[in-house]
Length: 292
Image (cartoon, rainbow, N blue to C red; front, top):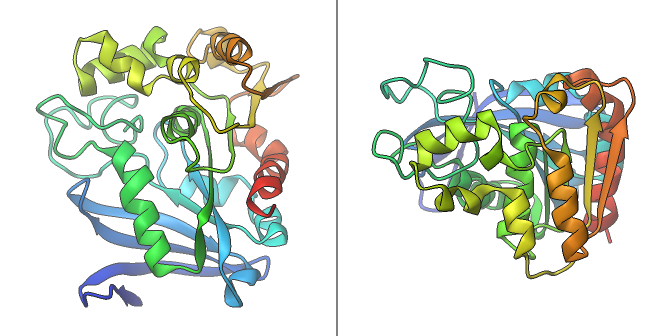
């Protein structure tokens, strides 16, 4: 295992694995997170272009129960990332092993279910700060240690991570060049997953929930222009179950005249087979803005 050191001399990153893929390298690193106060892993794909210069960087946020491994092993994104010269970062979805009472009790709250919020409730507020982790600490770490251009970054994700991608872009105007999502939770304050997570992490004051809800955030988005791409499987059981609520988000975007391309894909479900089918389109969408 190889370690990277920060300029201050303390160990910042420990390399866990490295595999050659489409001329580039798929790596996984571990580090001690300041925001989350635990060890965290994240995956980094370095395309061939990264050997000779700085590349744009694309952040992927995964869904419920996932680690940094799901996307890199199941989505088949490497070929498109290699061709377009994009560094792709895929973090874990929550802190791990914090010994918080109840963190392992259910699949849709606690471990593997950070929901990309900064918790304010006593049990969770020390560790469950995934919003600050993915928008501040992780990009800083990536910018310091890898050949990326910090001015050219974008974000995308799936399900809970699609929610994460949308709120990251909407809460930070101009920070991300583009955003896209697969089957995102578009209006979490109104769905069961969102209500459970937000109550647990943020408390019962629902006005605080709106700060992490894409449908609310888009209504007050000040610009610059954001071009949003969303793919949604028509046979997705969570769509029919009322967990995703894309119509609410699209209506809010239409009202604000924010361009959103929403594609309802006939026959597709919520799985990585669906993601793998359209991943190249999403990489292309981001490359158009990142390589402009």
